[in-house]
Image (tube, rainbow, N blue to C red; front, side, top):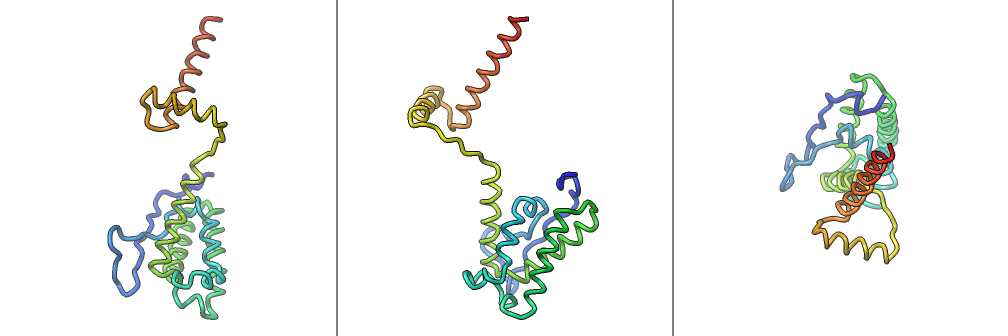
Length: 175
C-alpha cells in the first residue's frame, strides 16, 4: 500500500518557536507525511549527534546532553515505523511524536535550514537529467526560440507530441 493511501488525515503542526517569537514571513511547519516519505534520509542524517558539531547553531542544547542518544534512537525508530506502517492511528501517533522530538532537537534557524534541504531533495526527486551533445542542445534551443516556447520542457513535450501524433496517423493509415 502506498504511503499516500495510508493516511490523509495527518496535518503537519506549526513549529513552536524558541522564546515564543515567530520569524518574519510565513511561519514554519513541522514535517508532513509526504515530506517524511520524500526525505526520510535527510531527517535521519541531520538528527545524528555528530551533525551538531558541524552546525551547532542549528541545534538546541539538548543535543549535547547524555539523554540525546535515546531521543536520537527513538526518532530513527519512528521514521522507520511511519514508513512501514499501515495503521492510520499508529502513523498519526508516531508522526506527532516525531514532530515533537524534532521541535526539541532543532533551533529555529536549524529547522529553517532542514526544511530547505527537504524542499531541495523533493525537487531533485522530481527531476530527471538528460545529457545532450552541444549540437543537439543548440538545435533544441533554436527550435524553442522559433516556436516561442518558454522552457525546454515545453519544446521536448511539443516534439514528442508531434512524434506520437505521426505514429498514430501512420498506424491508422496502415490499418
